[in-house]
Length: 474
Image (cartoon, rainbow, N blue to C red):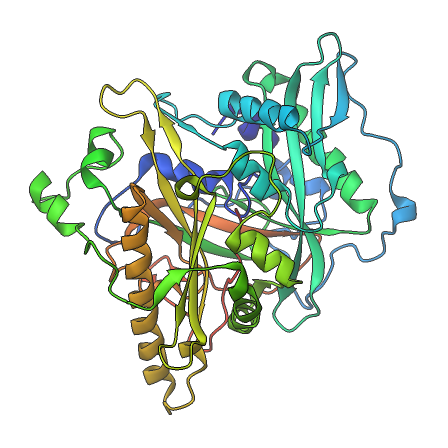
């Protein structure tokens, strides 16, 4: 993590839904067969969190007696109508993402400054196509795409964005939130402490619209996680990962054995799978909505338009989107007799440029995204244990096919977290546990702890009573 982030202790920037710390963990790509990492970060005294102790977040030792806003009294009238002050050499701008030039400008800033591993061997590629998909969902707010420019030259040197979403915590009424994405500061300006100012300005602009809560993720411990998940990685092209230094042989294994271990069938094993189309949105929407109702922390998609954008793809784009290089891939399973959609799954793409490697110039990564299956609502099985076994078997089959499809699309690795029902199939499909945790945080909202699919002592697990984390951040 950069010195900027160490100093400011701000929430790491996220891709549309997955946090920057989640992406950082990809750099290591710990491809071990299993086991439980013993690297739990411990909370520091609250006084050490200079930024967070001033924010409406729960302290580590604070007991939650009722779920709801930390600061319920604030109104739009209380929000300063003026921008947060900047150093005199900088000025605020609102990046116009309806123009190619602005998106290209953002792409250049991210590519050169967003994240690099410490060895400078890997750099994430947030393509213009991905940025359009991530930052312009239905209901996006242009004023939440905030930049900082050098007054003298007009050069863009920092950026932060907010993306609107609706969230549900257990049985409480759903409420609007913002996802804070793509927080980036030019490398040469990391000592200027622009990050805290960016956070304050986006908070101000979001508050002016009457939105008071946020959900974000971080790999480091901040005050205070509502739940914690783990990273898991499944090699699809083990040889390439090995040659780029991001995977190694397991103890007692040869490279040939590692290739054999990670081999996949060439053809999908469920014949009725096909790519999701616009005509499927009307069926996928209620299926996914019902499936997500099973979780304690989950998004509430508001329309078929949202479902279409996030799983079929953006409708109107400035940049041409080639089929094999599109940001998101979604598939449905049809009942062979009725033609009804019974299952749905998806993953999105985030590739990386490999620097200073004689054999390869990129790593293509798929990230597990949302899914749903009618098997979760089975009423023919009496016992909860049998229902769980049937669900696990179905999800394993669906995600085995997700791996096959991703491999055939030339992805090199498939990443996932222990959210949703993922603990039911990750180990069986030879996902290796990653090196760190992904903590979920609610801003200006107190909630009882929510299970993240992972136990620090026993590994992958799900609460017997159901629930858990059902939201994924890009």
